[in-house]
View 1 (cartoon, rainbow, N blue to C red):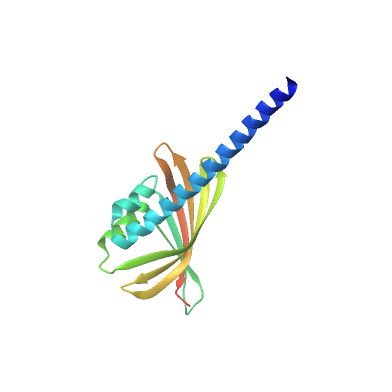
View 2 (cartoon, rainbow, N blue to C red):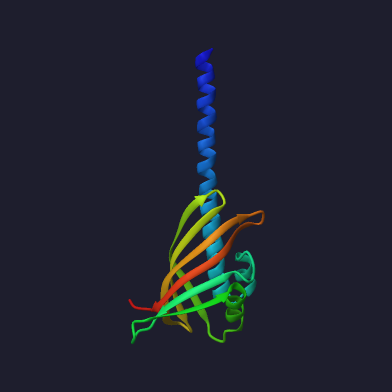
Length: 156
């Protein structure tokens, strides 16, 4: 009888561990989809895809750009709304692609997502860099609360 109780406890524990692992896989896929929606919004100039990915239009976006001649970094900031407006009103064709998307789960409701991206403007190599997204899980799914990225001129 005692062995039967141990089997039940071990089975319950393994089931919980399996569900937890499955949840992390699902979360990782959802987070990758969220980040890809930003790229889809940029590439199609659909600002709603960008705004839908962020928790609020006023979510902050910070960037650093290393100048080629000076080697010094300049800093800029905007909001999700500012990015959406820029993309929507751009007269240039922007194409953003990710080399990879890496997800680090902090806990069940928070994660950091890192990407390496490349951007072409009107079919010409423009810039590339790293992106770091802070994300949280809401009732409506995963949302970006902030974005920090670096920009450098594209080099092969």
